[in-house]
Picture 1 (spheres, rainbow, N blue to C red):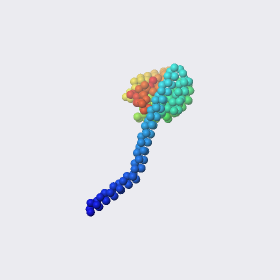
Picture 2 (tube, one colour):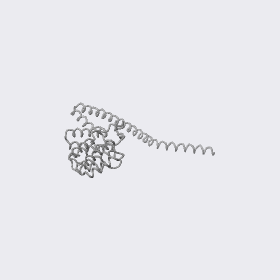
Picture 3 (cartoon, one colour):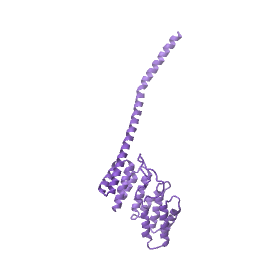
Picture 4 (cartoon, rainbow, N blue to C red):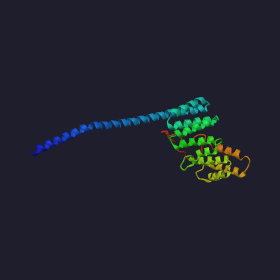
Length: 256
């Protein structure tokens, strides 16, 4: 008799498990489908980004070649298209290239706008601060002292990628304003600080000599020194990685 009760109980337990499984099955299928859709979505997004980066890289190379060959119209068109549709890193670079072309044409205000837009579009501080630095240098000769200083001071903060370049630019800005004592103090620091590159130390020592000489040609020579410190392009060592990020430069040398 006991065996009969146990058999009935086993059948009831099996039936409960079967019913429970049937109720849970739609949820299990839904969760599995969601995981599958998510995985496919991530794969699709990654594939799209890879394709977009490859396309932007090719367009960017063609734009650079066009510029080198003197076809400015084609270069401007390609850079503009990259700036509209390219991934963040290439968009930033394309905007900076357009800014550089405007600067070469003497269109400072337009160049600064492109540099500022590039800084906003930048995916990381390495690109963003470089664009901000180029914007500040574009204004060095014409904008009021406070305007340029306001752009450079944030770049001079600790751990910013172009802190030393900003420090050097601030020293030349003070020299431009005739604030020789302050400028000299900054150049002395630059000539001795460990983080300064060899080029910075050489320019700092030359600036100190000019200030100490008190000659009438101080400003003209200082302008030449300042121009030699201005960033023209990204350092060759700073390259775009396959994911569109920037690899850091090995030193603090300003791009010449």
